Image (tube, rainbow, N blue to C red):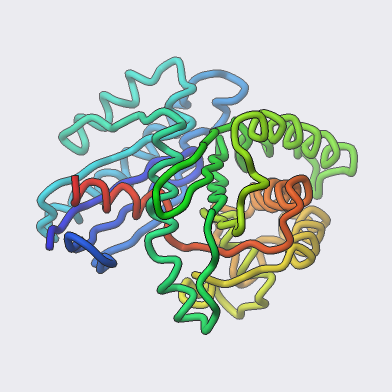
Length: 316
């Protein structure tokens, strides 16, 4: 058993997992935290990380570093993804992390980001299905990780990855680019759909999505859509993990969110405050993926790149 700390710094949120990881089998969480810092604020338009966004990230990262030390993690890995890859002032961000955490972040390419997401998502699928009283999902799996700046698509099975592609559609990026109204106008929504479809054409050129037997959806946009589809009275990870959400429910939730003003979205009992502004775009990405690829159900995973970071760190 090895105690490690994994930090995932994305475009919208920064998350911490401290876990005990055995050589084989499932890992045991000690701490799992998520804070919305919006590191990618404005990066799609300016090409730079905003100073205030870097400072918000620094404050939370200092708390995570202290937690990892207090719990006795023997190793720490921080992975930074889409927003950082795109930023002209990436070195400024990296220096902040080095000073705060004591080591540089791994600014991973899209391919490795996809591999880590696949590892984290699929390691617990069978156990999650059993907990839900459902049959185990069938492979090959198409794992889709909808982030703030990018979305990763990975096709694979027990033997590993078959194909992967990362594309620059994410809930923060598309909200800032297209969805300006409160609620967004039909024209804004249609322009967003066009952007998503254009990105999906890049995916299908490299990933044979038709081979997938199961769509597995990851990250906060997907889990929030699942919570709304399940009509949960509050956000419940145990009820969400391993749930199966039909495409019709995804479309209904997506349409509802895009029709709501901000105040109404914020009042939803499952809504994280940091996701209120971007959940419409995230739900729309999931809806268009399912429609374009002809997938009638999504299996929802609470485990994702964060778990993949921890598993690879402990077992490599």
